[in-house]
Length: 395
Image (cartoon, rainbow, N blue to C red; front, side, top):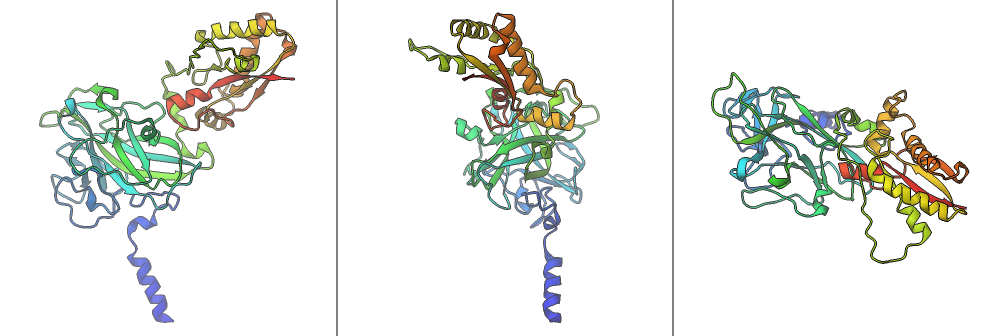
C-alpha cells in the first residue's frame, strides 16, 4: 500500500508544469514555459513542449534564462519582457515585397472542438522594436488536421472556407505597440472536430493593412523591413456566455464607419410575391446605432408604397443586435446608447413608416437582442449581418 501511494506521489511530482494550468484552457504549455531539449539558437520553437511550426522555416523561442540570440527581454529584434513566466515565441508575420518567408506556431488542442459550440480564443502579441512595419490580420486558424508546408514559404489562404476558420479581432486593428503586449481576442463557432491551432498571418500582402513606423530611440542597428511579433499566453476555451470571453471591451474602439451591411438585390425580370418583397426589406445598422442610414431610405420608400397598395397587410418589425453589442449591454445595463438596442432599431423603422403614411395600428415591433443571428460568425461582415430589422407579414 505504501509503495502504491509513493508511486502516485512520484507520478504527480513528475507531471510537466503546464498541467498545473487552468483546466479550462485547451492549450497545453500556453506560455511556452515547459521545454524539451536545449534552447541555443533561433528557429527552435519546437524546443517548447507541444509547439512546432507548420513550415520548414521554424519560428523562434526566447527565454530570460538564455543568452543571445535567444535571450529575453533583450535580443536581436528588440526588447520585451515575457507577459507570463520566463519565455515567449516570435514569428515573422510580414516582410516588404515578400522578401522573407513568414513563420507560424502550431499546437494540438487538449481535445477536439464540438460542432456548433462557441469558443473564446486569445493570444498576446508585442511588435519587436526593430520592426519597420506593423500589420493587422494576425489570427488563429482552427483545423481538423495540422497545416503543413514542406518548404519555406507563406501559408496564404485563397478559399472562403479556409478564412472562415481564421479568428481575428473584431476590429482587426494594426498591432503597432512596441512597448507592451496587445491582446488578440475573438469568438469562434466550431464546425466540428477542429483539434489543431496555428497562429500567424494567412492573408495575401495586398489584403494586409500595413503601417510604416519610425525607428525608436535607444536601439542600435537598422530597422528590419518586416513585421516581427513576440507571442505569449495563448488561450482557447469553451464559453457559455459571450461575456465570458471578455472581448466586448473592443467595442469601445471599433471604427464604426463602413461596416453597415447592405445586400444588393438584383431582379432578373422575375415576379416576386408580396411576402418575398416584404422579406427583402431588411434594414441594417451600424455598430451600437439605431439611426437609419440613408442607403436604406429608397428601400423603405418602396416598402411604404407596397403597404399602401396592400392595405390588408399588417407587419411585424423584428429588431436584432449582434452578439458583441448584446454582451456590452449585459455588462453595462444602464448604458443609454445600448439598452434595448434591438427594439429601438425596430421603433426607428416603424417611425419612418408612420411618418410616411402607414397606420401605426398595422405595425408592431419585437425585440430579439442577439438570440436569432443571421450569421453565426464573428467577422466584421458576419456581425454586420446581425444588426438588422426584419419585416414579417402577420395575419
